[in-house]
Length: 97
Image 1 (cartoon, one colour):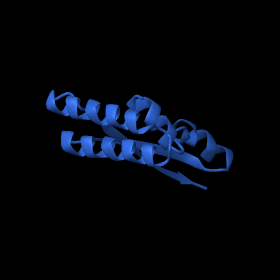
Image 2 (cartoon, one colour; image 1 turned 30 degrees about the vertical axis):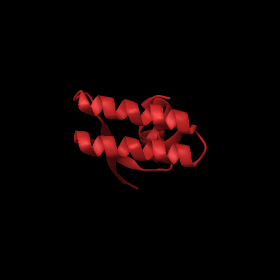
Image 3 (cartoon, helix red, strand yellow; image 1 turned 90 degrees about the vertical axis):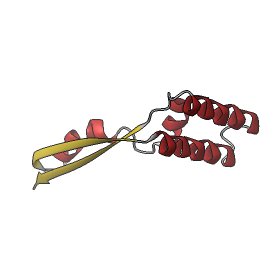
């Protein structure tokens, strides 16, 4: 199980930013503007976030206890090596009718 595998199952509307402009245009908005920002997690916050993702996946039966152990061990190894990195992208749109 990789971060990408898990993330793809948890991001309910991950397709939305790529299609938002067209959706707003289709329903009659104009002068559409989209601003995005990326938040860079501290290593501790990233580790906590990814650990919770693994715990949720295990609780929902998506991964086994063994896979959760491997997932958690992988996160701990990345933290100890100073190699854990995570970002979350946000977006805000404005438009006129």
